[in-house]
Length: 513
Ligand code: NG1
Image (cartoon, rainbow, N blue to C red; front, side, top):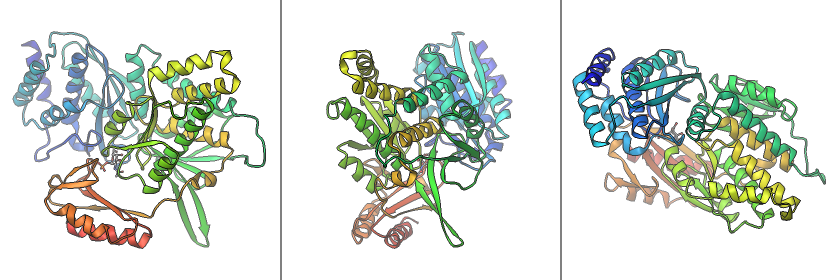
């Protein structure tokens, strides 16, 4: 009863916006920040309930809209493992976000708590709060805090301005009883990076190029101030320049909450600058190649279960390259929650979305095997070093979620290890020309897909039409899917030439409209 009246009272201070229906999409809720107070308050309650349900484990709640415009904001929940909120709670998130008044909200919460056996008796619960640099973040954190504290026994711990991956990392570390502050995060990243650099074999031959300076564009987001900390720790090992946007020799670019990154170079011919994008598929390929090499040194290139996870947006040329390396490539729908879950099934699971979100996961079993080799002098120095390198990769790469800062350091370490320029890396394979379009439709949920979003189930007839158009183009590939973060249907097409990819995407966009 006490709990009920607290919830009624506090939620009456956060009325929901009229006339908008929110849904928990590919990356939580996103909308104009001005209408999110009530959603954030309510998801604060959800996070506290999730903590109670998981026996008091720490839950994460991140206020960010990533790469969206600065006036937007959003909210994502991290489960005790540091991964995304379990999908079977998403319908509850939707229903409480859209409850019209305090009575119906409290009714939904009470029923859900009963169904899930969540103790509402003052048991302890904890939620870690984080936000990016958006100005709206501060007041939204306050709303989340109110939501959390309206669950009796729950406390909110405000971590301030952090990257999304940092918050996920902290949630995971706390629940594992590991050191979990931001200082520990930076320590772990810089130590394992230095370890990889120390383990680079003596340079031989003319293949090695000094790899020069890296310029990082931080999108005026949270990544800039965090990368500055790493730069200071790594000055002697990595020549790094941090800018909001600029051009340079070898450039990397982070998104607003630093959970994604890509590389690029600029070539200028006359007045025109051309951007050569080195995307998530190529980052994935570089990581896969390095890991494969270390496994060969360990004579384990077939015995270890390595899984590479991509989505339908992966360029066909990357999938071919990975298959040719002898790796197993599997596909999931778009959205980190799907890729991460799949990657967890392997000894080493490497996943990346083409847009630069991904990481490398290691199973506990495999890590102890590596530890054994590292500590066994009879293995021989080469094998011990290969094991050390893979252990350093496991420490460097965020095990909770894709992380631009750790990913960037692994790219840099591998380029130094190989003695490769960015161009050399970019030559691993050549992308097939592709085109992505967005189509505004009346109701994007009318499009229902299957087979990791590669084919359309509904409306009837649409897939047949897409197949017929695609078959006209050599090496043609095309699919459509409703976006989970924007009110559009996305069209992706690939073909042998840019003109053909454009034509195919255009013609399919017309029949989707
Ligand atoms: P949607 O809007 O569902 O396509 C986009 C990206 C995802 C992912 C999420 C989260 C594409 C095609 N889609 O999802 O990969 O990054 O945003 O931010 O890039």
